[in-house]
Amino acid sequence: MNSLSNGRVAQFLDQLHENAEAADRDFMAKVKAQFEASGKTLEEAAAKLVSEERASYRMTYRGHADHFLAVSPAYGRFLYAIARARRATRIVEFGTSMGVSTIYLAAALRDNGGGQLIGSELEPTKVARARANLEATGLADLAEIREGDALETLKDVNGEVDVLLIDGAWSLYLPVLKLIEPRLASGAAILGENAFAPDYLDYVRNPANGYLSQPLAVDEGRGNEFTVRVP
Ligand SMILES: C[S@@+](CC[C@H](N)C(=O)[O-])C[C@H]1O[C@@H](n2cnc3c(N)ncnc32)[C@H](O)[C@@H]1O
Image 1 (cartoon, rainbow, N blue to C red):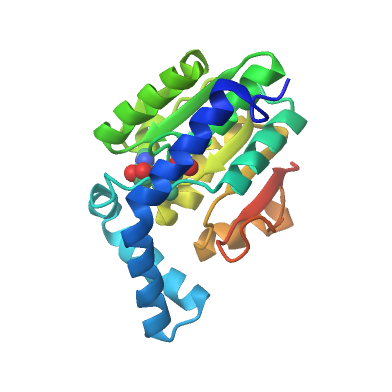
Image 2: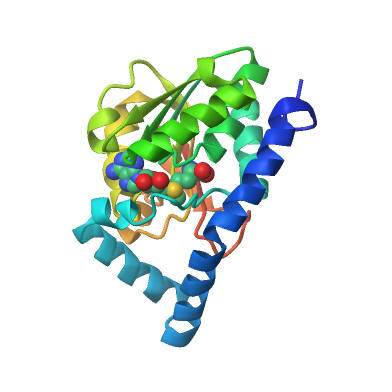
């Protein structure tokens, strides 16, 4: 069983990626132009963004209420593959947005035989859209999207976590990882999408903290980090 190869989920994801591209096109073009004009390296530009966002992540993401900021189809397929390989039954997601990554992960749960995904999203309108998208794919029974700040809503995830996707405010990558850390199963996969925050990378790349971590060659240049819990 592979829900990405054809059928309702595959068709809906194709449409959702098209919608995401259209909704985010102008914003992405603006970011690209600003980056090129800045003369900064990617690391310098990312460090500036992380520190600006740290001061006001709620305001920052309020400004993105209509943007998907979604994972790419290639990254989504990787999420699905990892959740299948891990035979995941419990997944936590920091940063659900409109639910694109959520659909890939929930599809993997269903194809694994069932399970539970706990998502988290600050913006109420995005929560509503993510829930509607999950309904449309027939995956809603596998996913619980918690509305509010993940630092609060993910305090209690009950039970072991097989896969953790970290894709919310960049400045909160390390705090959210530490929040979920006591629940990570041995061998859990942790996907840091756009993991530019230096404190996060220093932590997961230090073997003394119980992780094996390296950059991920999917969507190179987007700061994707792949980490395994090896306590
Ligand atoms: C990059 S987008 C996530 C994209 C999503 N994973 C996907 O592939 O469709 C980041 C999302 O994280 C949300 N976010 C940021 N900080 C958050 C927080 N502290 N708690 C919950 N959600 C947060 C933002 O509102 C935004 O929708």
